[in-house]
Amino acid sequence: MKIRVKTFARFRELMGTKLEIELPDGSTVRDGVACLVSGDPTAREALFDEQGHIKNHVIVMVNRRRLPNREREAEGLHEGDELAIFPPVAGG
Image: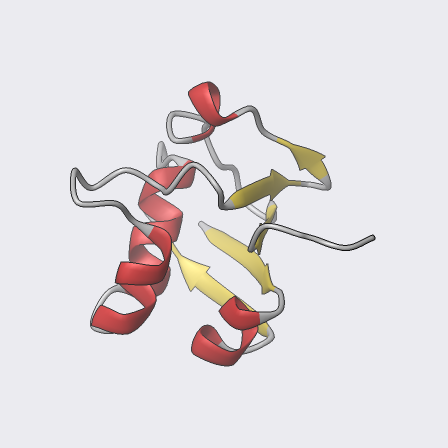
């Protein structure tokens, strides 16, 4: 299945703007993010912690719905989904 990926801010610099990845049916958000950074240790370090989990401060959205940290890695992806990855946002 094909998944569209959008990245923002620093993640855009590391991985590009609009990407498309191919994943096996039954893949999860974690699988998608891992696929996106495979072969790029700098991007992997930016998104995953030492235990191999998506870092808590990384914001993950699927089809414009923000996923709670505790659920996001296991969230299933489907053909045509849009996965968006944001760094933490600060401002005033």
